[in-house]
Image (cartoon, rainbow, N blue to C red; front, side):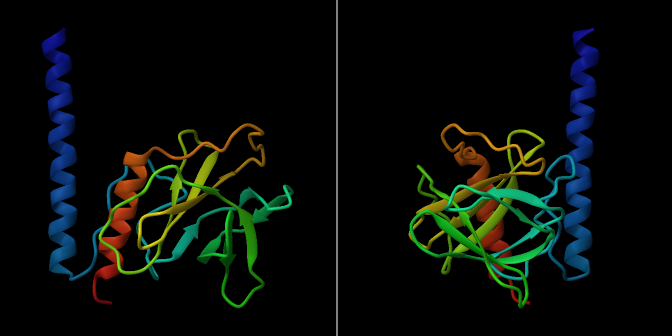
Length: 179
């Protein structure tokens, strides 16, 4: 029974490696950047980068404003900027910017970057989304939103440093590629 389980796990790992290698080879032949496999489809993807400080939301997300009220950020591609201590500004095209509350991340991220980087990454549960804005020195602001509108009243829950580092490093690399 145990050997059958090990064989199945080995087969799954082999298939994942094969799929990843095939995607990389195809992207290299077509001179495009490959999509980074991330497991199940999430609403925050690494597939489209318009710039180092843009994030794409595939559906509306509820965030909290600095005044502690709910704001719904519609789906779209947003330019993210830090507007001061504890706030991020999201701008969609020529529309008025939305300002959301953000907490100072307790982690310093050291990635190879020459400009600020913003990423939107899924939370630990299906209902949450994090927007992480990292300065060149590695200091970061992080805003946590929810798809349902149910926000935690407790302390801000930050994304795990290892997950955030992978997303930031991927974004830094992809943003540095020539267009």
